[in-house]
Image (cartoon, rainbow, N blue to C red; front, side, top):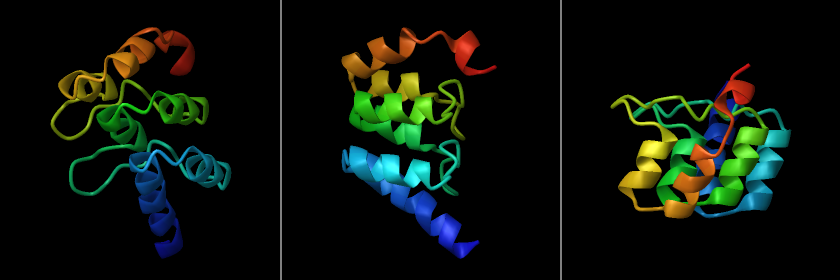
Length: 103
């Protein structure tokens, strides 16, 4: 279990560092993109939104990240992108067909 938790933390760090290659590698290893941190309930997609990384956001959604998932304080990835004024991320995520993604 510890190894899996370590990989979840590595996924978050890869996203925060704009490391698309490492993010993809970790997702391909089977890491759940909807795993949350213990402190705020943030997912990797929340982190991508916070730094405005559209490419990692697309990758995470392709691997099953839920754009509608809210963290502990009720914010979604879209909310965080707007808070941090990442308009490209906000535009991309609002363009998603959520009905297709959440099936």
